[in-house]
Image 1 (tube, each protein chain N blue to C red):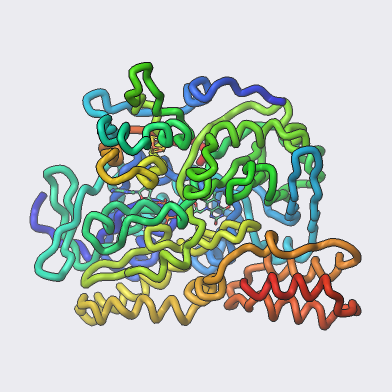
Image 2 (tube, rainbow over the protein chains, first blue to last red):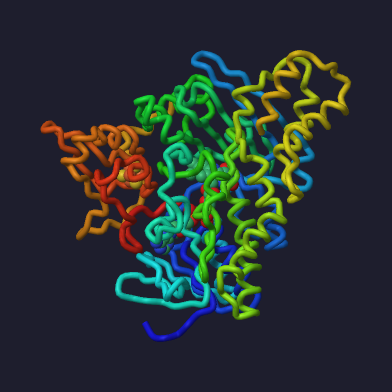
Length: 431
Length: 96
Ligand SMILES: Cc1cc2nc3c(=O)[nH]c(=O)nc-3n(C[C@H](O)[C@H](O)[C@H](O)COP(=O)(O)OP(=O)(O)OC[C@H]3O[C@@H](n4cnc5c(N)ncnc54)[C@H](O)[C@@H]3O)c2cc1C
Ligand code: SF4
């Protein structure tokens, strides 16, 4: 290729890469985005609940224009045992106004985002795998794909959870199996009417199940089931170290989950539309603590570890978008000042830390275990609803630690302090 | 329960652009055997890419790979060479 130097090269056409590219092109910069799939989205897979308020900051008409499936207004937490299931069925009209979470299918969503990028002037290069990074001294100056070299003032690595490019460069370590989890997922087609009847939803409303217990056969992780417009996304997420130790087989666990008497009726008569899998994270905050920048190089989205998996929600897409905004701001600034040194790149961390993106990472540092340690039953319906409202309602303000969420909800209720609550409280304290 | 068939049958419903020339997966049979990691690949891969042959070696059907990276993440050093297929090749999800 010739000597043209772009302002920015983005590697990876997932949400992180596409949002970064869009923002920078909107600010008038010359951006090229390279994606190894035949088009942006074709390699990408999420469970599928997107806490979408962040997208409305970027695309005010996101909910009208983007290919979103259903608005999630019911969250069901299902404790699955071998021959029984206990569900917490949390429906809340407040989750519909404003709309807080939507189900999505990534191939459709990413294609839409890619179109938005092109409209904004991003040059998209699909079907190209970046093989390595170009460096001059300490400074990253471009990428290499096969024999071709492409240069830019700044490179964004948005290449997803594996991020081989950062590993090959020794910027980030090979991740420990305990930080990672494999998701095995199927999309199962069902007529709209069947979905409405079976899941008791109307119109565009939808349900998200978070399932714990028997669905993973004692492997750390969980299951999920999300309603789309005319299909169901269903899967299990299995922590790698744990499945390795337990000696179990991923596909057997997945099939037993689909056959579970509490689950099978939900997908009965469905048609398999797709069988897929993808890596995700069990401990995103530990990965975000690793390096996320070098001179001329910033790492964003899953490539930098931006996923919080609490067992009840996996949030990676909103973090991908949120970290992309921080990256775009840092680069816009660097381009204006013509300064691509490490100290200019360090603005990225500061941006993150001043935003819910970085703050949530800290809040969830001592991670999950909420439903492993807490015992929830009895008359705590209202208390639970208020807690869950605050868990599932992401209004882009920094998250409060769960302890203060619970205490606030508890104070507002008329319940007495009991041993049970004290147990729950200490369990939550680690969150 | 809805019967979706074997994993191979399910994968047949997916779209792949196969790289006929090059496999992106290579097991070092000797190291895999010594470390016993081949059986782990067989168990952990959601696409049943790996199989244990009668002679104890590990067979690789790279065409079925869904490119998650799980096998590489659990591989002991030296037991597996794995990289993304070349641009435009491999799985092309339609749903995600
Ligand atoms: C089973 C499962 C369930 C999940 N559920 C949810 C959920 O319900 N809600 C939620 O918010 N998040 C969920 N997540 C997490 C979410 O999917 C991720 O956080 C999100 O996809 C990250 O976006 P990204 O853009 O950083 O990376 P990705 O979407 O992975 O995009 C990376 C892109 O880079 C490309 N690429 C990689 N290497 C190269 C290269 N060398 N050259 C060119 N291109 C390259 C890839 O093809 C890909 O398009 C889930 C994840 C999994 C696996
Ligand atoms: S990358 Fe995933 S699908 Fe491909 S061989 Fe490895 S474990 Fe199987």
